[in-house]
Length: 536
Image (cartoon, rainbow, N blue to C red; front, top):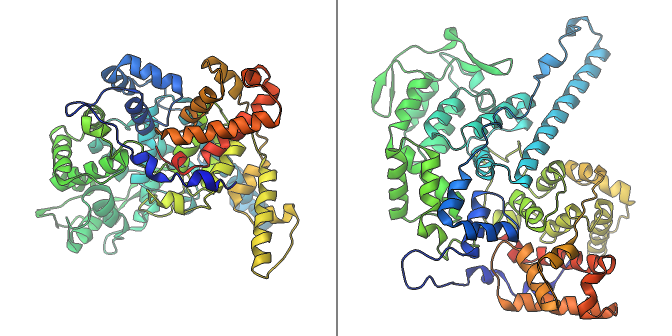
């Protein structure tokens, strides 16, 4: 889908200023309430935003931290070894062994996919939204990947730790991650032993997880690696091998002693550089811009003085008037998960967590599969990582307007047209073309998606009576940011054009859902194709 006339409005809409009355705290209005619900969770529909305004800022922020303690061990996962202990591998023929290994891999992949579907369902439902937001954040901070581990059990167990400690102390989380099987295996520490320490885990611990570049030396990396020798995993659990641990004296960040991994964690947490690094990453993530030196120093000091309590840090941030400054609101590029989950939540459509997880993978955000130990690059990278029309086309699939196979045919036709213009033409049947697409795309094509999205009823509930009111409601519901009146006028003109082409009087449009439904869904997809739809 290409909507050139709309695109000319550009990304500048998000930068439109809204005065706050000449200083002091900005008013608590729908714009700021939606900003909080977008950043602290995964978006909300218009009624939820209205309720947040009615409750007030303090009560809305407090509600984010009221977590259901029932969701602590949410998903039972089996280790691959538990699935097939009998018969022993040694009793099998080579062919039987291959078949059994393939079955175990398939079962493990199925377990991973089931868990990811459950996790994204939590995002779609808005259950403990801030917990799930922080679970996703920690997944990108302490990165591990199913591709390298080839085992879902450790990845799921790690995700459950993130959820359990999402709003707790970073100090506790860091200690857990120092013992985490998925992280230790992913960064090769299970191979580290006395006399031959592996420095991968030590380097990322210092550079990415705690201190940041420039706050440690290469000697610190080597000494930390020695301290973590013997730390690894066995049968899906942390395993310490004393005979592989270097018991000698180490010197780390100016401290000397016979340190082990627990000692290293304590030393790192004593460094104000650690609080500064963690605070900077949190501020950049939630605000979408790098913090000023003064803002960073305030929040780093706050984090350090409050023993790395993430809940206190976020409460301070969400009540901070500067969190709602014009530079921040509506200016962060949404990741694929944010874009897809946000679209579904704002429009009241539930395509299912598994479908959303697969679709996000097609767009470059594969849960349990960060591209590198640095996690996902953010900002404009999300827009540059996929063809500009693909996100809205996939959103159309999830909202029930387009079938995946129809989308594949459209993609195939465009590819053949491009090849024809380039003087290269190789016509493939749609089925064969599908095989050339990413695995996630092929899996998505096999899903039977029939989401029910009744936008007509939604407009009736909102009290819409004419094209202008319908257009305004559609734009407000579909987008996470405020927009200029000109965009609403464009939507109104397109709605009027479609309605008149069908000979439907303006005051009768919403009386016939069979005729109005397709028009409204098509308009919603067009709105989601705008650059503004990728901001929140």
